[in-house]
Every structure is written in structure tokens, then in C-alpha cells.
Length: 108
Image (cartoon, rainbow, N blue to C red):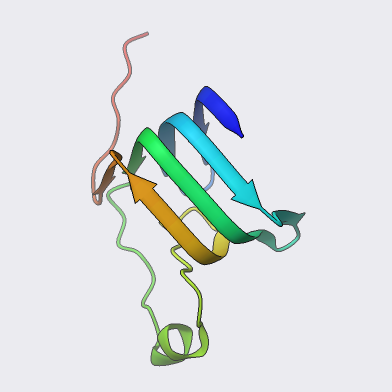
């Protein structure tokens, strides 16, 4: 179990960014691969978290019917290039947001 974890990820290629604050994260049988970028898990429990994804102004690629049909597990990509395959997912007191066609402006 992980508690009170915060992280940010920003792709220099797609300009997509992710900010996450995880209150409590628990997982069983977790497997991470870097090629292709994939996270698989039998069980994930996420409590008291905040996850924000910001997608750039460019239009995303099309989702094909094959992509939707062949997956049996929860596999959101959020345009980050990372696959998720989670057999059992429990989410409580958690906020998710996904903003498309927007950019984050940071003060320098």
C-alpha cells in the first residue's frame, strides 16, 4: 500500500500532462512493462485521490472498433501512450478530470 503520493508526468512528444495525488493506493499482482508501456494488475484500490489529465490542442487519433472490441479489461490510455489492464478496480472518494484541446501555461 502507498499513502500520500503525488507525482506529475509531462510528455515532450505529445505535450500531454498528468498530475496525480494518491491518498491510498493498493494493488495486487502488479506488472509494469516499459516496452510497450503497460501496467497490468489483478486488483487496484484507489481512495482519496485526485487525477488530472490535460491533453494538447491537437486532435487525437481515431479509436478503431478493433481497439474497443478486443479489450476485456479496463484499458484507458488518456493519450499518454500507456496501457492499463486492471481486472478489478475499486475507486472511492476520488476525483478524475480529463481536459482535451487545452494546454497548461506555467509562469517562469
